[in-house]
Image (tube, rainbow over all chains, first blue to last red; front, top):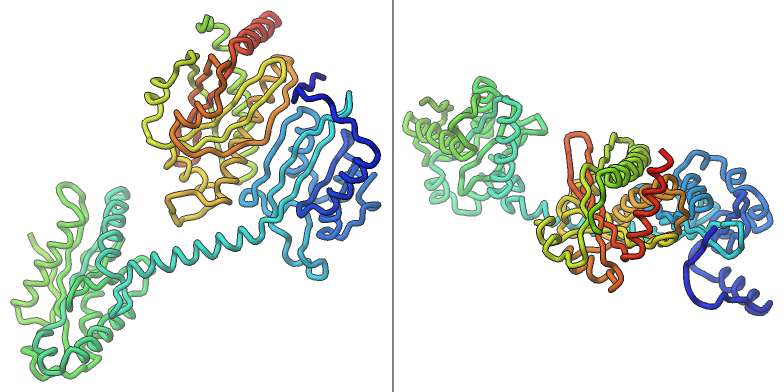
Length: 327
Length: 202
C-alpha cells in the first residue's frame, strides 16, 4: 500500500509521549475509538466509557459488531469497512443518522440517546494494516438550540401573518394563501371558491356603540366565521376594516353558497344588538361568492374582485344575504 | 493535450457513473426515498477557467462539499450545487418545511454527508477500476461564489479541471449540479495513463 499523507519525518514517540497521548485521549471531550483491520476495538476512551457504560476491558479486544449487534448492516458498519478496506473517510451527520451508537447522558435513564455526529477516518501508522478512527461528537446542545431557534422563527412568522385584533389570518397571509391555492387548483383542475363578507352598517354600529364595542363585534364575528369552517384547508382572513375573506379550496359554488348561508345565519343568531342597522335590530352580514372552475383568462386577483362585486350586489339588494357572482 | 479521446472520455464517464450509481443506492437507503444520480457529460478545462465558472453557474452563490485525495494521482474533488437548490435537496431529505436563507449547522452537516457519500463513491470506483489506492480527507463545506471556492483551494500546480454534470433526481424533482476535480499536469497525465491501462485490459 502506498501511504503518502505528509512529508514530515515520521514521529517516533518515546514511552512517556505515548503515555501522555493516551492520558490526553482519555481527557478529551469527544468519543474516540480505534478499530483494527479485523474489526476489533483497539482503543475506547474515557468519554465513550462514561456514555456507553462499557468499560475498556469489555470494549477492547472484542469485535465492534459483537458489542453492538444492532449495527450490523448499518451505515456506520459500512463506513468503518470503507475506511479500513478502501482508506475512505466518512461523516455521519446527526440529521441523517439518528444516534447510531447507544450512548447516554445519564446511564440510569436509557430512554434518550446522545445526539451524535460521527467522523470515521482511516488511520495509517503501521505497514500492511489500516486502522479506523471513530470520533463521536455530542451535538445534543446544538440540536436543541437549533430546534429552539426554529420554533422561535415559526412563532415570529406566525405573528407576521395574524391579524392582531381578531387573531385570524391577516391580509398578507390571505394573499399568499390564495395565490398558492389558486395555483394548486389550476394544476389539478379542481374548483376553488372565495367568499367576501362584510358587517352591515358597521360605521353606524361604531357611531352608536363606540369603537371598543366595534372591536368586540369584529372579534365575535371573526370567531363565528372561524367556528363555521370545519376543513383544515379553509381559511378566513380579515381583509380590512369590517370585511372578511374566506378561501375554500376544492369547493364548488354550490358548496360555497351553502357555507355562506350557514355563516350568515350563525352571525345573525349571535344577536349582537345593532339599533341603527338598516336591516334589523341585530348585527348581520352580507356575503358575495366567486368560484373558479376553468383556469383560462382568470387569476387569483380576479376571483377576489368577483367576490367583492357579488358582495356589493348583496348590499344593494338589501343586505343580510348571500349573492353569487354572475358574468 | 487537454483533449481526451472518445474512448478515454467514455471510460471516465463510465467510472463516474458507476460511482454515483453506488452513491445513489447508499443515499436512497439512508433517507428511504428513491434517488437517482447520473453523470451525463464531462469536460476538461484548462487552468484559466474563471470564464467557464461564471458561465456554468448562473446563480450568484454556490454550496460545495470538497475532499482532497491522494495516491498515484492527487486531486481536489468538489460536489457543487447552486445555493437555493442545495436548500431544496437538504430540506427534502430532512423533511423540514421552514425555509431560512442559510442552512443551519445541522443542515450543513447533512449536506457534507451527502457530498461525502458522492465523492467517496467516485473515488472508490476510480480506485477499483483504475487499480489505484487513494487516501482522502474528511469533507469540507463551502458557501460562496464558485470562483472564490475553487480558487481558494487551488494551488499553482492545478492546471486541469475535470468538470462533470451530475443529475440528481428525487421523486418529482430534478436538480443539476457539478462534480469538479482539480488536478496538476502530472496527476492529469497519470490519470490518462491509468485510463489507457484500464482500456487495454478490456
